[in-house]
Amino acid sequence: MRTTVAPIGRDLGWMLRVLGGLVLVSILVPLAWGEYYAIPGLVVSGVIPVTIGWVLSTAFADAAPPDKLHGMMIAAIGWLAIAAFGSLPFLTTAWVVTAAPAGLETPPPTESIDALASPLNALFESMSGFTGTGLTMTTDESTLPRTLQWWRSIIEWVGGVGVIVLTTAILARPGSGSLTVYESEARSQKIHPSIVSTVRTIWWLFLLFTSIAILSLWLAGMPPWHAINHGMTGISTGGFSIIDGSIGAYDSVVIEAVLLPIMIAGGIAFPIHYLVLQGDLRGLYTDAQTRWLAAVLLLGSAALWLSVSTVYDSVTEALRYGVFQFVSAVTAAGFQTATDPTPLSLGGWPTSALLMLVFAMVVGAAAGSTAGGIKLIRLIMLVKGIRFRVSYVFYPDSTVHRFRIDDRVLDEKDGPREFGEAAIIALLWFVFLAVSVFVLLATLPSGAYSLEQILFEIASAQGNIGLSTGITGPHSLPTAGKVAFILNMWVGRLEIIPILVTLRALFWRGGIYE
Amino acid sequence: MSRRRYRSRLLTWIVNAGPNDVVLNLYLVLGPLLIVLVTVVGRTAATTVIVAGYVIGFVGYTIYNALTTTGQPDWIRHP
Image (cartoon, rainbow over all chains, first blue to last red; front, top):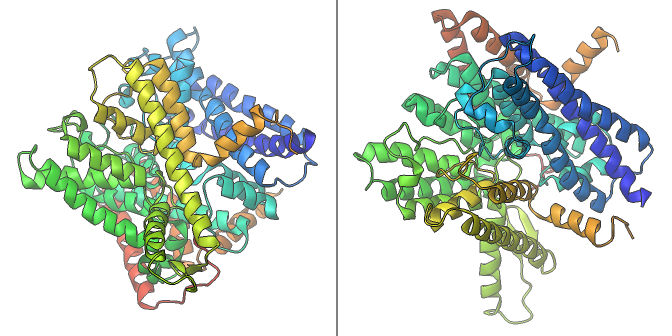
């Protein structure tokens, strides 16, 4: 039993310590903005995970390196724990504002603050943030204290790359243990032979692109605070905004044009960015995922433009909203321009347009990026695998079959194995999607939303996208729906398998590793 | 850990983790400083020109780099 618990406890402890550190560093924000009433809550929210994390990492300091089972359990339990403890800043700040204790100058409570005072809503917001989803339980983000606006942005920014990637970069633990845990966080690409060097380079690239994104948005006309938050949530393809109506509220073609390359950059795998910065543009067209991403973006944007051109006043208006929403959906950014302040919100789009966006959200962008969905590499694997299986029968038995993905040639053993993995994840993805459809159909008011809207909302949650047709909200989404969405976001971020492995280990073997 | 040691570790990370390019390392360091600048000073002609130079310079340098293409390291693995 201890051989299972110890590595998980130690790594979970370190993840909580990093989370606590992140909360405590964030105290600089209320200090800078004069929101002193938020400081006690942040201190408590930081000290609790740091203390628990310190106890766990100290008690299990001598644990063996994690193997594959441990890695998956660390990722699954760790992400759930991070979301739970990450909800504390929302809860404590909301409680302080609503309680308005004497001696603390608190602002008047708003509907958004009231919503976050509910533990379930706070957990939803935290899970949505860390998984880079961007669906929110707030009704008007601009009424949130700057402290909470920052906390929403920073958790999306960290979650975009991955909590484990951050912990690995800080711990710098050599050996196979870090690789095992790294791969369990839905990552497989390496930039360097060493995993520690890889995660450090990922953070190097991410910091550079974040700065460029923030400064580009500022140049496009955003105030500094808006540019900082949207730059962070844009490059991490998270999608949280700090104003009501997301990017559509700015009604600025320039800001939308600047966000397009930022979102696309977030949807390209980090190793490709690394190659490009080294001056090797070949990575952009020799990598299958990047090629497919370009094709999906071009064809999908054009198709969506045509689909929505019937409901907008002009062709250029349809182009503006169609292209932005498709890029936002594929890259999993979830920024919305088709929203209430603009001529037409997503809820008013034709069914064909919504289903195209569902396709984009399910597919997602490149594995090894900050994007969600089942990832392009699996779509490529499925398409090529099916073609391989069909063409198989046209050749004599003595033929040696090869399955080519990029520069890799898979033999008759590896090809079906990788195809099988992609097929399993795609199948499970749709199973979880279907379960949530049933939950929402059973709990939402009858006739309030169409089936395509429900499908859209769940694909958005499970793909970690964040686009909404209006179902998600503190009052509009029933409790069962909130729980289902929290699970969808968790499952979608870790690509299902680690969670099923963890559930099997916990409920079947009682956690005993045989 | 002394401050000197900390600075040295930060510098080592910047130099070692990136794509081994002095200009890009400089970009990494300048980015946060410029964000602080525009936050403190605000939108003026000078800050606009500086930030525009930073962004355009990055794009230009990336294109320049591409014109002197290097080979693709064969140890980069794909999923």
